[in-house]
Image (cartoon, rainbow, N blue to C red):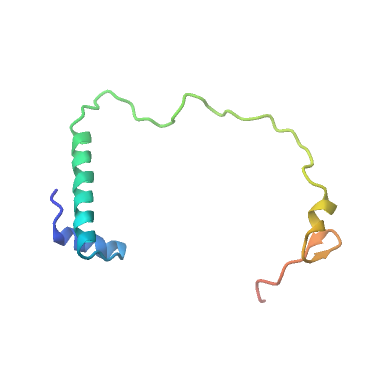
Length: 96
């Protein structure tokens, strides 16, 4: 595929971008390099190679779940700008 001015115009329109002067030349060169890289990848024989689904062979490596209290309620409410006994008070967001 050849990257020409028409292709750049179409991509700019789709992405709502605008390139002028040297930027346009630079993006054209970058896209040409990207496409040539993918052409090299297409040339590689991948028959018999299974797709990579996971990056490692590990499955479901989880830590043991141990419940614990990380902060006391009084400590959490200590720096609250507004509170109501055991709860944070926040400004009304939705009108009914």
